[in-house]
Image (tube, rainbow, N blue to C red; front, side, top):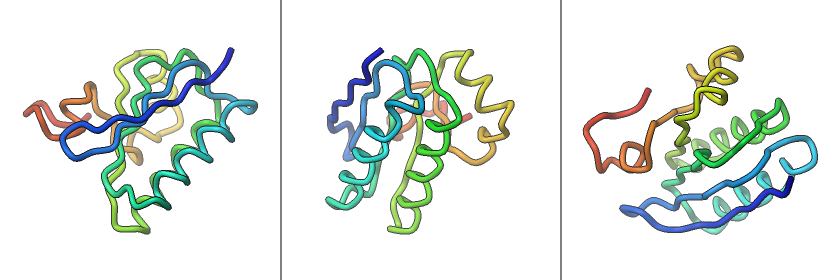
Length: 117
């Protein structure tokens, strides 16, 4: 399956919409796009995983790397993920304790009062 990436702006945040599967073959494309956005000056980044069908350990590593790079630059980094199958991966790896996870774009961008998970 292909990986599709698109960006948009929501409430002064850059949202990276990720569609498809993030695995050993497609993760470099995601890593490169995250790096491009951060190097271009993005400081409020939200990665929308709501249409991701599969995420492996390589993809998890890319997301952790994006969080680190963002924090090193003084920025914010959040993930939108409401799918139980992906949330289970984050819980099993304890990355739900590391990565800021939100149920919706509105929560991730501060437009709603339901906050993160």
